[in-house]
Image 1 (cartoon, rainbow, N blue to C red):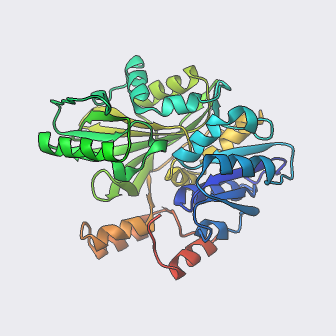
Image 2 (cartoon, one colour):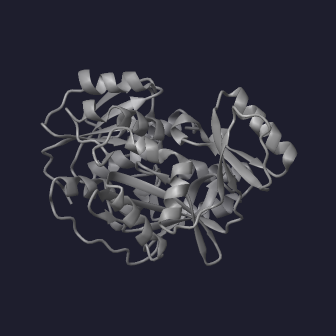
Image 3 (cartoon, one colour):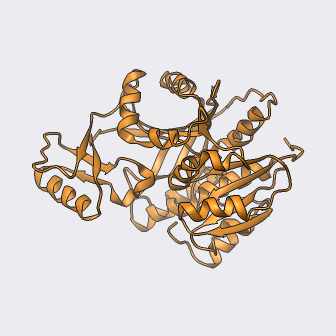
Length: 375
C-alpha cells in the first residue's frame, strides 16, 4: 500500500535493526522518514534509500529534545515521533508537553511521565496482577537499606526501569553467594533499587507486537523465538511468525486500552508447557516487529493511519513463516551453539530478513564492508 505522504515521521534511535525495520516499514508504504540517529554517526541505517534526512545526536535527553525542537525541519504541519529505544522513549515522555507543540507523540492519556511510570518493572508486575496476567514472583529491593535478604533461588536481578540500565546489568543468582556478589555490583554502579524476580524455567519466548490508540488495541501477529543470542535469555535471532491465538493477548489489549496508551507496544512472554507468563512490557516499537511485514502487517503505518482517522484494513496471517536476524544468528555458529549447516538451512528457509532486502541493499552492504559489529 503506497500512501500519499501528507505528514512527516521522525525515527529516533541508534543504529540497530529496530530503527532500520521502522524506516523500511514506512518507506515500503511510500513514507520517507526523517532520522535522528543517536550514538555513532556512521550507523548503517542512515544508508537506507528511504531516509529523507538525517540528524545526529548523543544519547542525551536534553540534546535530543533540543534538536527535535530547534533543528529538525519539517515538510508538513504534522509529524509523528517513533522512538526505537527505552532511553529515547523515556526522554520523549518526560518532555511530552513541549514536544506536543510540534509533534504527535506516543503518550498515556496525554500525561507527561506516565509512560516512564509504567516502564517501572515493579509497576508492571502489579499491573499484570490486576489483569490476571501470570508473571514471575517479583520483589523490589532498596539497595540503600542494610541487611538485604532473599530466599528465592534461582532468581534474576535487573534494573527496575530498563531506560536507566542495560541488558549487561542483568544478573542471574543461583545461591546466596552469587546474590550477594550481584547486590554489591549494583551498589557499585550507583543503583538505588533493583527488581528481584523468580527465575522461570521456560520452554520458549513469545513476542507480542501491536499498537493502541487509547481506545482500541490491535495485535495481528505473534512471534515465537526459536534461536536467541546469547543462547537462552538473549536477543531473538531466528523466529516463527503466526496468528495471535493465545488468550493472554486479549488481556494485554484490554490493559493498554484501560490505561489509555496511544502508541506502539511490544510485550515479551515466557511459555512453560500450557502456561504463559509476562516478562516485560515495552512502550515502544520492538526490534523484531518488522517480521510481521512478511504478511503485509505494518503496525507503524496502522498506528499512524488510526491517528489520522483512516480506517485500517483487517490483517490475517494465512500461514506461519520464519524471520532471521542474520548477524546474531551467525554468532550462534561462532559460539558453537548451532552448526554452519543449520545456519544455512535457516537462512534459506526464512521468508523475511532483518538486513537483507533486495529493494534496499545499501544498509546491508555498508554493514558488511565495515564488518559485523555488535550494536
